Image 1 (cartoon, each protein chain N blue to C red):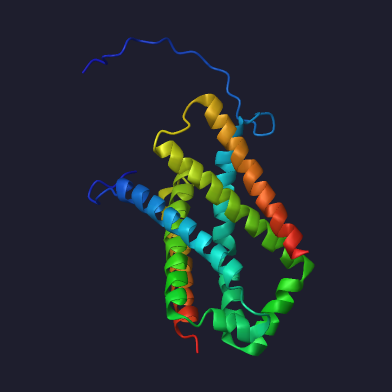
Image 2 (tube, rainbow over the protein chains, first blue to last red):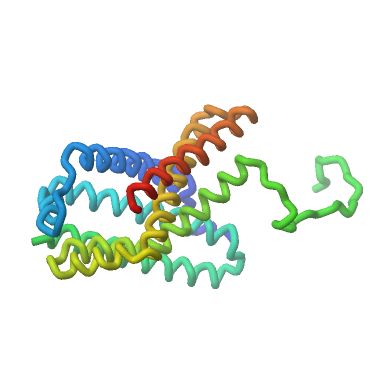
Length: 115
Length: 132
């Protein structure tokens, strides 16, 4: 059942799904390029050093947030297609939404508190 | 108000929803695999974040992450994640082209679907060779 009191945001969902997707493609290519021209040296020191530049950490965090928002839009679409009971669907949406918010906070914590 | 459409007599039409006997056209196969790979990546995301966090937290936790990654089953899951990511990305790029009305003709739609399967398959194979 469509709730007419809430604004529909089908178009913005559609646009954000694509905007995040394009960003992820560019980040993936960038990551690949960096891996070939500036591969991390073996061991913890090298790996940690790879993540030291703040620009790379911020870019990686933006990638993960884009991925998480993209996943949220996809999860909503899948639930809409297969779970027809509105109250069960709302509960599942809340559950998966909480998981994704947790993922987003965790990603930020991991990348921004790096010593 | 009377319906503006001509009356169509009701008939019982044959329905075939048996997934085991339906032969999916190749664009439909790529489409459902796009959805399955996306759902799979969503489910594995916490595990991947855990690996990233462990690998960066300290030298000891880095070793833990490395040991986990060297387990054969984890390696297999990594390969599956690679395939899911690549298939999802390739099929997604194809979607963007379709949004822009490129490749809508049936023969193009079939050819690009086949290309998505082949390209993501080959890149996954390359990753598999690198992993083992």
